[in-house]
Amino acid sequence: MLSENEIREEYLLLEKAKKDPEAFGPVYEKYFDRIFNFIFRQTDDEELTGDLCSQTFLNALNHLPRFEFRGVPVSAWLYRIAANEVNKHYRKLNAARVFSIEEERVRELVEQTAKSYDEELIRKLLGYLTELPTEMLEVLELRFFEDKDFREIAYILNITESGAKMRTYRALDRLRKKFNLSIKYDGKK
Image (cartoon, rainbow, N blue to C red; front, side, top):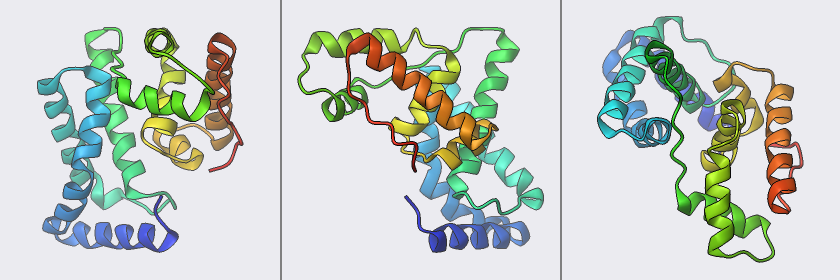
């Protein structure tokens, strides 16, 4: 989690990049891997991910002149652009969205929430997650796999902060009921 000072420093870097696009390089370097992995989990196609990731950073660079400080990390802005690129891709193809959830990340989540678990629970949970509606998967991915706070999730998905909290609560409630997990939801962060 970035401090307010770190968030402001990144915004100052973007302000500099508005005048000199070369100054965008450190932002690209810092966030490329995260954005690539975020897109890859939604496409499960490395070549397509590369294309969408390139388009994400190209759009970010092209939209720098209109960029405004909103109090969220620069990464939230990049995730929002990436999410829009993925959505645009699936709309264009009129295809069902893919979510490739890493078993290791699900295992981490279960280890934090279940008193005991076995490989069968992990397997069932992985299968069940792919059956959840897209809006629930998006918030779970951003909250638990990308470690975003509710303000960032709201910004990325272009919803209200209370909407981000509600979607998260509903998704976690479904998982709790289905798998008897004790996933904590404090409504904070």
